[in-house]
Structures are given as structure tokens and as C-alpha cells.
Amino acid sequence: MKTQSESYLEALGATADLSRDMIDQLETKGYVVIRDVIDPDWLEDMRAAFDGLVKKEGDNLAIEHHQEETATRIANMINKGTVWEKVWAHPVVLSVCRHIFQGPFKVSSLNGREALHHGGHQPLHADWKKTRPDFPKVHLVNAIWAIDDLSAANGAPRIIPGTHHRPELPEDILPDPALPHPDEAIFAAPAGSVMIYNAHAWHGGTTNTVGTRRRVLHGLYCDREDAQQQDQRKWLKPETAARLTPAQKWLLDVL
Ligand SMILES: O=C(O)CCC(=O)C(=O)O
Image (cartoon, rainbow, N blue to C red; front, side):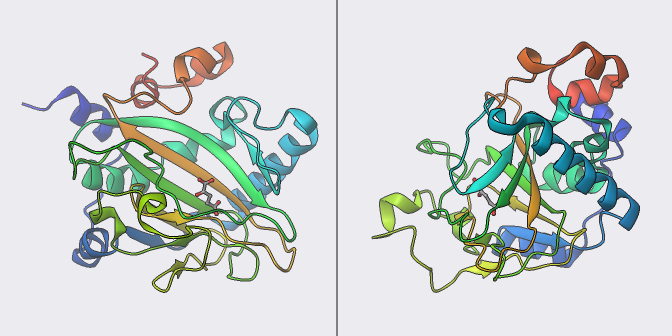
């Protein structure tokens, strides 16, 4: 007998079998990079929608969550356009989430971020800030969507492979989490790629030294028992609710 979660995930198409190689990478490194998830037309739509929101929201950008001095952020994208629906409910991303969580999960938030010229550097951090008495249970998975080509020069995210296996937070271990780390891997990839990672792994944005466009989306998922980064019930607009399927509502936990 299928569980309710299994039925909804099936309705969302989250049924892709992961290759042996992907499973190995998720286990050893804590992340996978998948290329060509976004086709050129969809990329253009996303770029236009991203820039449209930046223009429209101005100083109010990301007030629902948090602002960052040297990076543009957009929050609550679930309620800011239909073009994002294929992002947070993407079958391949959900299939990878299903593998990493090994249990029921939901959308936590969908945000946008662009490191500005000479800005965007972040200390290494894990997205789950609390202690982990239940280690190695996974509380968070993140998917970073490259809307532009990402490179070490324009501030691509860095991640330290294997740190999802560490119960400690980087700030408790490293003398200075803002410094380069000898093991860091850069998510340098063409626009249209997605990096999906166990968000207990240590990671962070880097500096956009060249000033080329570097828009990304962060699709965050959490264990179904945990609080969402953005309370989707609180922020859900009637027009968003009106177009969602029951399975999408379940994924947002707004049923
Ligand atoms: O956009 C990036 O480079 C990663 C940002 C990140 O890890 C964060 O904002 O928590």
C-alpha cells in the first residue's frame, strides 16, 4: 500500500531512477550537478522574470526573508510568477530529494540571488544551523539553479565535498570560514544546470570579480516535520492557490 507522500510524489513525476554514479556522488560528495535541465526558451523566460521582479520590488527586495549587502536577493518566488512552478516542483529535483531525504519532505522556500560586481562572498555555512542530536538525519536539501553561466570568476557557489557527513558546523571547526578551503569545489557550470545538495554540507557564495550576470535560484526543501524557511501558508496568494494541483499544494504543505 502506497503512503500519501508516495502517491503525491508520483503525481508530481518524482519517480526518476537515479544512476549508480549519481547515488555514489550523493553519498561521497553530498551533491550532484545536472546539466541542461533548463532549455533556452525557459531560461529566457526566467531571466526576464528575475529582472522584472528586481525592477518592480526595488528597495523591498527580499524583505520577506533577508537582504544581503553585496548581492541582490528575491524571496517568496512561489507567489511571484508561473515560470517558477516548474522549478520548485521539478520531477528530477524531487527525485533526487526523495533519495537524499529517504522520507517525507516539502518545499521550504524558493529564492533568487545574484552576487553583484565585487560582492557576494559568504563564509562557509550549512543551511541547517541547529545542533544535530539526530545526526545523520537530513533536514534540508538545496537545489541551486544556474540561470546564467557560473564560473569561479563571477562568484559561483563553492561546496566542500563530504562535509554532509560531519555533524559540526563550519564556524565551530574552521578558524575562519570566510577563507578559501583547500578542498572546495566550485559549481562552475553552464546556464541551465542545477546543483542539488544535502544542505548540511558546508558551502557558500564567492565573489563576483568580473561583474558578469550570475543569477541563481535556491530551491530549498525540508523534512516534512520541520518548519519552512518561508511559511508557505502565510504567504500563499489566492491566485497562486487557484492554479495549484493537490499534489503541488501538498508539496508546499498548504493543503
Ligand atoms: O548563491 C550562492 O552562491 C549560494 C548562496 C548561499 O549559500 C546562501 O545564500 O545561503
